[in-house]
Length: 288
Image 1 (cartoon, rainbow, N blue to C red):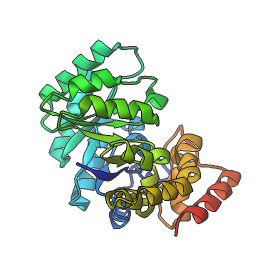
Image 2: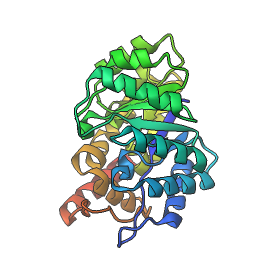
Image 3: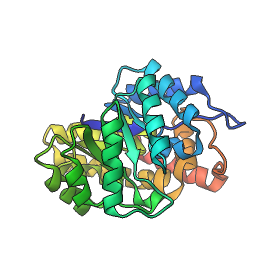
């Protein structure tokens, strides 16, 4: 798999319930924007605020709405829940599973490697490793990723560290395997592609799918300088809808683009007027 993926926003109504109809509309929005695959139940999807059955329902709605490849987020802190979620994702129509590192309790690299091997051994669909230390406090080392790349059912990795040096090490240590390497930070997308990434799974693609996709297309065409310039124009918007204001910021930005992404689920809160104005200006500056 390659190209631009989107960790799809999950729309909730004012009571915090899943809005399946609106979710289908968001699938159409990002697909029309040119993304290459969809990642329901990722970090930007508020997956950790959803139950097992609810996450499976999200995957089912997405699969019913699109023919694009689907990489469903199925990771939980524990093995049993991850395996159950992965089985349900397969039944709902996912093509692969994105499995976040176990979190909350501390695990060393050997324990993480054993965990991923067991998940991959038992998963009915290919598994993508997912390292997002900003949220989990856990960083999967390039050495562990390199060893796991030899597993027949480990298809690749999403690295959301934002560290291009780490990504370069991951690429070098997996270069002899069939291993798709995706960057998770929209601010360094063009640089990651030049460093050997196969694509990105970007929160930014919820808000500006056509712009995020254009970076990849420019890279494919050998126009890396143009890709870097476009990426630079999107950095402030990307920061606003990820690390700075999070999911509530992303939903506010989508509203500015005329796309209804619903309400954030508690304990998230909607952004205030000052933040909304800041985001509106960034959206205007960064999108056609």
